[in-house]
Image (cartoon, rainbow, N blue to C red; front, side):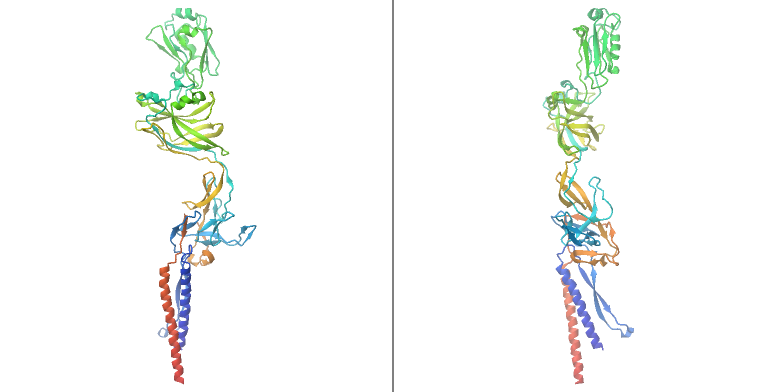
Length: 579
C-alpha cells in the first residue's frame, strides 16, 4: 500500500510543480506588462487522518498567492495623460458592453486597475491600452470644485470656455531712486519730477493747494486800517465776477459803500460759492499798505475764473487772473508728450473685457517729490495707466491710480500698500470696470538703478479670451487638466482612487483589471495613494527571482519523476518475486 501511496504523492507533486511552473511562466511573460502583479505559488500539504505514530507525509496542493499590495517601480514617460499610483489604490474603470453610433455603452459593474496608460480616444474618453475607460469626478471650471460624489466615466470635448474679464493684476516692481526721464538734468533733483505747472490739468495726487490752484494773487492797494482813498480812486464803482466751476457766479463791487478794505475783500472772497474758505488767506507785507490774497476751489477739479466789469480792473488792483490748474488726476491729450517726458515706463500687459476683447494696458510711474530737495520732502511716486493711446487734445490720455507711493530711506513703502483698485477702467473705449492691482507685501520698492528705469518683476492678470481645448494632461496634484487655445490651464476632473481591505483577494481579469469579490470586500473610495502624471507603474515581477524559482521548481519536478521511476521499479521487483 505504501508503494502506491508514494506513487500517488509523486503525481500530486508533479501537478503542484507544474502549477508553480505555469505561474512562473506567466510572471516572466508579463515582466514588461504595465502594472502587472506577479502571482506566487503556495504549497499546502495533504495529510491523511491517522494516529500520530502512523502519520505519513502526504500529497501536496498548489494554490495562487496574489501580490496586488506590492508596488512596481514608477517610470517616467513622455505621454502627458499616462499616470501611475504611488501608494495604495486603484483606478476605477469600466469596460463598454457594446458600441452604438460609435459611442461606448456602459452598463456593467465598476472594475479596478493599476494600469495607467490612458490616452484620449476620438470621442474624448480616456482609455488605457487594455480597453478600460477611466472614471472620476468632473470639476467645475469656475469654482475648481468636484461636481458630485459618485465617479462617472470621464469624457472631454472641445467646447469653448467663455472669456474671463480682467479683474485682478499682480504687479511687483522696483522704482529707481533717481529716475532718468527725457526731462532729467544731471545734478538737478527737481528735473526728474513731474511738474504740475507744465500741464493743463494737475494730474498728481493730493489735496488742493495754493501751489496748484491759484485764484487771485498780487498786491492790494489798501492797508488794513481802512484807508480806502487809493482803492476808491482806482476802481470805484467797478467790480469783478468770480466763478468756481459750475457754481453760481459771485460779483464783488469796489468803492465807497462797497468793498474798500483788504479785510472786506477777503471776507467777500470767502463767501464765493465753491471756494475753499479754509484756504483763503491774507498775507501782509510787514504791516505795509499792501497784501496778497490766495483762494482755492473746494472741489479740486473745478477751475476758478475771474471776469472784469471793465478792462484794467485787476491791473488797477495790482492783481492777476487765476493761473492755477484743476487737480483731477488726469493727463489730457494735449499734455501727453509732456507727461511721457516727465515719467518712466512701468510695463504693459494684455487685459480682456467680458467678451474677451484684448486691450493693451500700459503703466507709467511719475515721481512727484524727492527727499533730495531737503527737509519736508519725501520720495513720492504716482502710478498712471493709459486710458487712450490716440486721444484728442481734450480727451483723457493717462489716468492717475489715485494713491501716493511714499518711500522711506531704506526704499520701503511707508505706509505699506498691498493693493489698490482702479475704478471704472476704460482703455481705448473698451470697458474693463474695476480692476484690483495687487502688489503684495514688499511688492513695490525704491532702490538705486543705474539705468534710472523701472524694473518690473511681476506683471500678470487673470483675464482671458474664449478658448478651445487643445490638450489634456495630468498635473502635479494628480488632477486631469486641460490646456486651452487662450493659454489657460483649467482643471477638468479629479481621478478617484479606490482601495480594498482584502486587495489580494480581488479577482484578476484580462488587461490588468480586477473585480471585487466577497473576500476582497467592497471598494473604499478616496484611497491615500498619490497620482503621478507622465509616469507608469512597471511590473512587480523580477526575472532574476523568477529564474531562481524556476530552478527550484525544475529540480522538484525532476525529483518527483524519480520517485515515480523508483516506485515503478519496486513494483516490477514485486512482480518478479511472484514469478
